[in-house]
Amino acid sequence: MISPVKIWRRQKNVRSLLNKKGVVLSWTVIYAPPNDFKKCAPYSVLLVQLDDGEKLVGQYVETQQEEIKIGMRVRTILRKTRITNHEDVISYGIKFTNEL
Image (cartoon, rainbow, N blue to C red; front, side):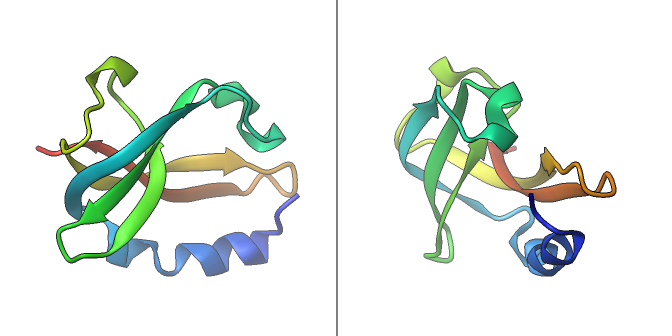
């Protein structure tokens, strides 16, 4: 279980990562996830090199896995990452979608 304090601390830096664009370097599909993500399986996870040179790993959302290609352009978005049982705190984080 993750505490509300840890969730709050992690989310302080999320704003600086919003709407950044980059290129897919690699990707995989997760079929056997940890307990917190079992409802999402299977899901795609990307390794992306952002235009500023930074590399991020995150879930790919809103489109089909068949559309993922190495070298395709994506952007960061804010989405719910998990729901904890502790005080019903909702954790948000960075995920990827197609570049607009």
